[in-house]
Image 1 (cartoon, helix red, strand yellow):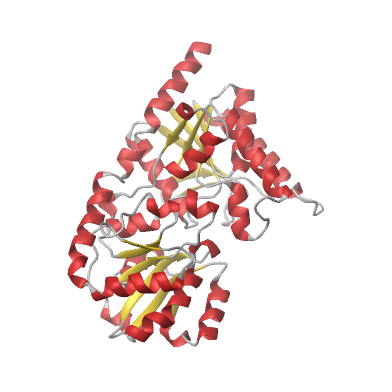
Image 2 (cartoon, rainbow, N blue to C red):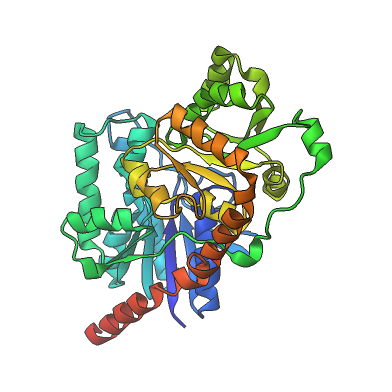
Length: 406
């Protein structure tokens, strides 16, 4: 049985798009007959022992390094050394056939060192580039010295890996442009587990009343409040929407770094009574909040991160037959056909968002076709069995090469 050791930034019980994609990959790999093992880095911040089982999945954890001083890069270097040491221990214990490192590059570089030392092939799966995520988090700027250095580290890891996986065509094109042979880069698209999603149900009126949404048309977002999600654009568009449809309310379910800024923006715009912030809700309760929303909004800003990377949330919305309106960034263009599976509007343009959402709300006769076509798209093209099957030929080739060298 093929044994795969996955090196992960973080995992459940933390909830994020990263952890949900990971679980979907692991489930399908197990169905294909592979044995999977799982190591997380010190960036997994949930309290727990160095080994634990969560929801039936066993994880090896890595303790946080003790770092003295605040020199730039010192923390990252200490983290990579800690991951390398822990990965060596775990690899010697479970004796994997393949090391599968997932973003960021802080995971790939230690995996490459351990793989070389132990003679194990290493694949690197890029979900986003670390340097672009740092730009969004405000820790660097595009083109800065740190940005260029991080980009060089990323390119070095890509060139040294035995194979590169990534999540979408935008990232694949960027990777190939760095000099990686096209045949060494395989897309494992974001997808959904169709069986986990039913077409949307009826609103829970008790919850709707509790949130003050009775009698309202609801435009919503459910997820993490990161700057790149563009929720500020949605709030800027709301006054214009209210002029035409005064009963519209915005429902924001979740939390994150932009939470306080968004609440302040709503106050400054005088729409604080038209925007409902629920805070984070238990994962088991999320479906109830989806059922309250008439149109889901994904107003991502245009930047390298969003132009290159496809998100998971719109696919989950499509699997539930939801109506959605999204900005026309590259990551959305790979998923959504304007007027067929969703509605697209010009990124960073509140007027365009307001116009498209108002048009969608005013033409309810189009809703059944949009919902059906969205569901059909994920059923046929974006489901996990189809995506994860793409690992098989790469794994088999690497195992054959390893056996030949041995």
